[in-house]
Length: 126
Image 1 (cartoon, rainbow, N blue to C red):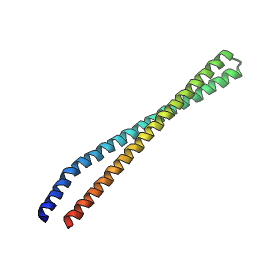
Image 2 (image 1 turned 45 degrees about the vertical axis):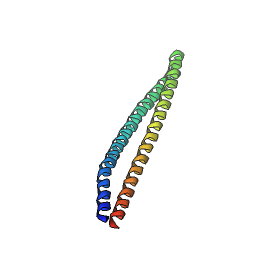
Image 3 (image 1 turned 135 degrees about the vertical axis):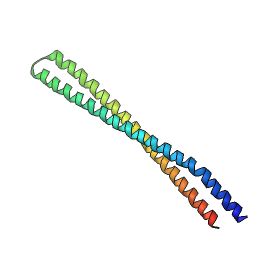
């Protein structure tokens, strides 16, 4: 009877382990995709901030030269740059939240696998 229980437990672990490993691998890929998305967000933010700096410089130059029309146009461009930056920051925050979720999910699956392995080892030791 003990042999039957031990064999059953070992078989169950053998069946469940690949499924858990696949979930961990899927989560690893999701985490990497999240990290890549955050890097893209950072690059986009950098570009928008550079554009904002250029527009601010152009506005200051227009102001110094008394070019009021150009100055007003650059004020609008600055506003648009700031909206784009806020949008990118919100997108980055969302990507960071998704990353945290995927990391938590992966940790829970690893913990479940560890507990399952410990339970199986304890069950077969009896």
